[in-house]
Image (cartoon, rainbow, N blue to C red):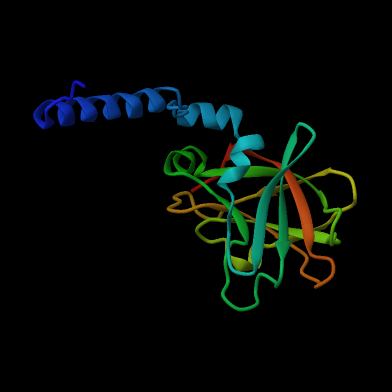
Length: 193
């Protein structure tokens, strides 16, 4: 049986492995939208992009599907001001998204409902930007069917070094869970700086 000597095998194996990695990366989404595109089209978290959700202490988030619809089931075991404070269940804005949105009013639309298991009666939303912290939570009632909740944010500063879109269900021990299907972020007019 033929066997390659080590001096030939290892370089060939490295080339094949490198080719496999490069080939796999070539099929990924490598396009970064320009600030102008983000300003015109906004940001949308739905479907696979819901997997980008993070959670702070006291929350759990699980991506589920119902038929063809993906959603995040978010459960809270405490409130946003209890214990260590965080942005709740959140989507972090990337540096190029911050660059595109900073200095503008924002409109956020959340498509949300009470979960079928341990349904919360309400949910709080916030956008954490410089000058907007834990006192920015806004509460909305939710029902059994999906509904769109929309609110506008006027950031107090024009330069942002961070940005998080936060979600926190009511935290009554028996009724603490919501389903989030979609989040839209729309850039509105520029603010005076």
